[in-house]
Amino acid sequence: MAGRPRKQQAARPEKSLEQRLWDAADALRGNQEPSEYKHVVLGLVFLKYISDRFEERRNAIEAGLSNPDSEEYIPNESRRAEFLESRDEYTSHNAFWVPGPARWQAIQDRAKLPTIGQDIDTAMDLIEKENRTLRGVLPRNYGREGLDKGRLGQLVDLIGSIGFTESDDHGSDDVLGRVYEYFLGQFAGKETGKDAGAFYTPRSVVKTLVEMLEPYKGRVLDPACGSGGMFVQSTEFVKAHGGKRTDISIYGQEFTDTTWRLARMNLALRGIEADLGDRSADSFSQDLHPDLRADFVLANPPFNVSNWWDAKLADDPRWRYGTPPTGNANFAWVQHFIYHLSPRGTAGFVLANGSLSSKSVGEGDIRRKLVEADLVDCIVAMPDKLFFNTGIPVSLWFVSKDRHGNGHRRREREVLFIDARKLGRMQTRRLRVLDDSDIAKIADIYHAWRNHDGGYENVPGFASAAKLNEIEQHDFVLTPGRYVGTEEAEADDEPINKKIARLTKELYAEFDRGRELEAAVRERLGDLQ
Image 1 (cartoon, rainbow, N blue to C red):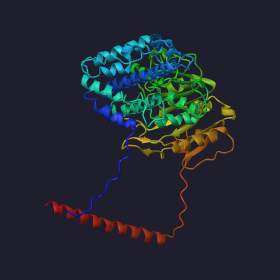
Image 2 (image 1 turned 30 degrees about the vertical axis):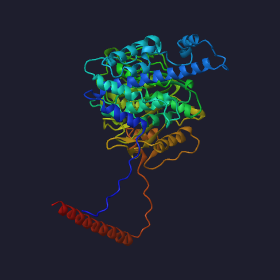
Image 3 (image 1 turned 135 degrees about the vertical axis):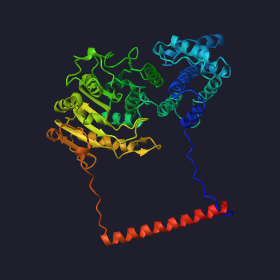
Image 4 (image 1 turned 90 degrees about the horizontal axis):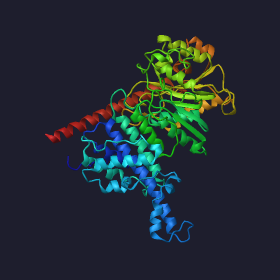
């Protein structure tokens, strides 16, 4: 085999900051289950963020106090030191107050000691006591016996490397926000079991909902908010379109306590104010926002939940279109969303595809009444493999009470069906993502149809607007494939005899290439003997 030139390998793309941190953090996991380790890592990321913001503000104060040309200048050094520890100087500038033992440097200095777990727990306690909005939110139990303190110390060193870097021109909160988002997604992919990924909705799914709903201003509700991804993407959307975070008011609810805490941390990390209630709670039996009427509802509720029913829900005013079956919560969620919409509100949410056609235990009747009430706006069939650890095919539903959205009259007695199953690309062997161009294709045709400005046309195989009588003919089954038809085939002008000759030549060439490959393999195997 001597003398054979080695095939040069293509250079691997350089890993991002998020990927490098994840690889290192995951390597330190040891025997910790992802569901447990998630809170260990994300709690430390948040603690680092708290401290970074504090130090940033502290440096700004110190610069003013030490500068003779500044209005804040204080010549006395001891007075300056006293002023630097004034709590109000931090909280008045939206920075959390971090007591001395809870500051990251103090934690970092003790990273190699066997008491590092207790030190972190103490830091979490101190921060919660000093910051009312964080009470009951931060994770504990870093001092537990099963958590390897050597690995924990290494993790502290790793998280300590996040902050301002030469490659990032964003503030530390933006870098940490990106890391936090990336870690949430990676943990969702790592976990196993029926609840895996329930706390996290993939970014491309969230972005599709937000780009279609366009929540520029008003009240936004997610009654199954997970770790708060819908809210993060909504505020990013507002900011990208020249608005302010305060243009929207955020309300949410989450059933699982640890996930509710994650959401609180995720939003606090980005400076997003939200009312998630004072505790975790079930949205059906303990609605924390009973009187709220939202302009937008965004949600990815858990699919096909079978144990949701409570006897006291039997005559609930939310079931205006029919009592949902006790063995499946899908249409309980739909009616919960509608109940919480303002008279001009619109909801966008994810449901398993079974809800488009199921007729079991009254589901077909509820779906029919929703269509007849002219509430169903649009159905989008999504590609497969978008979600971590579940192959259940899903669709996006849009329901609306709004007849004059964005200054245009909404199309009445009509539903837009979009079949987006062919969009997206495989990011990994198991996970598909939608690129911005895919999302824009879906959102643009929805807006063209909804705005009723004459710019909408059906696209065979992709989008079709169906009137009520056509939907009735399909027995109120809302599967987009029934309505959009098939794509128009591209024109083929090649004469049949030339096509046969071309394809035959290509086939013979493949045969030749196969024989060459076989000869090369035989030669190399001979060299090994």
